[in-house]
Image (cartoon, rainbow, N blue to C red; front, side):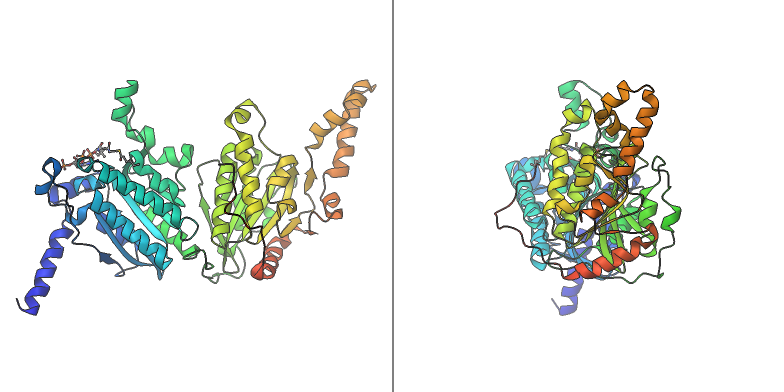
Length: 514
Ligand code: HXC
């Protein structure tokens, strides 16, 4: 064969594989509002940057008639490309080929690209769209999952790992995304569950739709498995591109600096927070009044909304925000918000992203539900995450900082490097009303006018503690600052912390309260 013919032959072989599972299967995929696996990768990556590997890999299963089945690419596409100019490794399961099911060679392709990602120290993005373990391959398929889970764990904290759920992700297959750092879901397309509707009907006799069981909203709002929710695949890819642009490629680097378009944020902090401590406000507006171009990428927006976490830039540098949200449950800490914050803090710490904490909370949510749901165990995760983290930590106490909440929200005592408080900050064991009821109970009961006595005692307690100056007198906070000075103090603190050194005792690993 001449050289030209060999090149033509290569092209024809590739074109055959690019047809995936064939016209009918692709039509079915499109009818569900889904792109094909290759289209997804092209939409996600920078134009013309995708390099595909292992196109010609074939499965070698001969059981259950599989020897006659030609499965193009064995149902998964792997390769590398760039996002905003930065290299990433990617795989996408092709549902049009045997339902994207995971057989031995399919898993080998995924583990190969995972190894590339880890060795090259670049982010890994996995697009999941699969019926799970390829049933005809038995234990070989299960072994494939085990190899993937092991690599997810090995890569954890070394490179960012992103999972995108764009179809079914059923059975044990869900655990690879669960081991990664960020899970993206799309309304009406993503489905994640351990046991599907058919099994539930058989075992429990209950009818449930796959959407109700494990649709995108379920995971974004209720289970906390998903970190980003989109209405379409295109929106989802845009979210991933934004996120990648804010992260470093690995744990030995810092995220690339990006100069802001405007010198100062568009929002004014003084206009956001009401003077009356009982008045709620949206803490995201405070964040937008501090960060470059007022742009904030919120993580887990729909889950445990009483705490807000996410990424932004300050003076071009990526930072992570952890902020109480007074709009939801007055910003209290509970099981879910502690979990959410702890995981985010650990991600920032692993990838050299400074953490900025905005504090305004009345404490932990009281009640039997929380106690029985394990608020002690979950709340401890947050204490652990803040104490363990060695990146630069800056805390701003805006209004309330009561009790356990004061300690948990990045206090000096958990080694925040800079703690600033606004003049209206209230730092106390609890709110003045509750405190007066307990410590002045006798005086109030025995007073001629108990109501007036209570009012006086509340005032007395508030004057003593409902300010930042007692904490400032002990050096627990570094400076009392006007709200308008917040961005400047953070900018200066980030400069000082750029060369931060933080030693910790040697150990194999700690034991966070998982
Ligand atoms: C082999 C599979 C498959 C699988 C789907 N297919 N799942 N082949 N192994 N796990 C094939 C179908 O036979 C069909 O082939 C094609 O993919 C498309 O599937 P359909 O059923 O026609 O598609 P749809 O109606 O959209 O239903 C999608 C589905 C359903 C809901 C995902 O296919 C399904 O329930 N699959 C099985 C899910 C499951 O139980 N997986 C095992 C989970 S246990 P043809 O040739 O007809 O086009 C597991 C253990 C992992 O994963 C443990 C790790 C620790």
